[in-house]
Length: 218
Image (cartoon, rainbow, N blue to C red; front, side, top):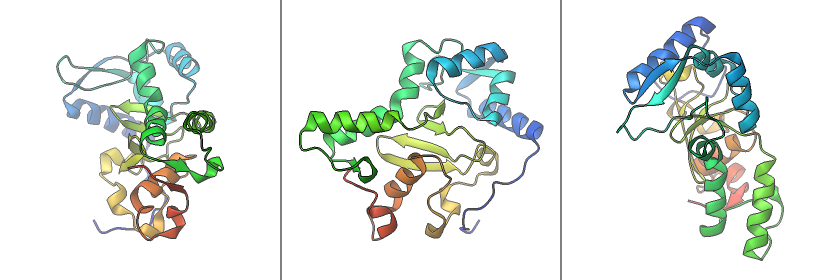
């Protein structure tokens, strides 16, 4: 498929998309599907973790709860035990990774204001600014999605971001960032993360639109 400018996500009937995403989980081979969450369990998990699961993924979780197979090395959130460390760690990993780059790799997001000279103050300010950003929903490993169905799926490792799918539905279609021209960036409108992705992919090049968003990082 040749690159195209980013546009509306491909239409899928909600039921078909849910079935497709369940099939996508089955096809990964690294998880088993336990019975789905109850609405109360999902509501509690969102409250405890302070995030909003997008409707399409919510429909998946109400049908089936993916659990990592022993020995697979896969990391899935345990939505039934949202207050346990493994799930909290997954939810907090994007923020912690960015803070690592602030501390160790000279990363700074210019929208946070001037970077304090003192390293501890710099890290504290970055943490406060990141705390204002809506949390992402972990799918598996370092793959995350925002709170709406048109959010890109982000692969996040510190301040290095990649978009393997333009939306949850595109996990089925195979459309990722390779199908978007530079003029179509940023991909999506997820607060902070869409622009950080653009900076990560294009900001180190000559594209001044995104180079000016930050400094340092991977």
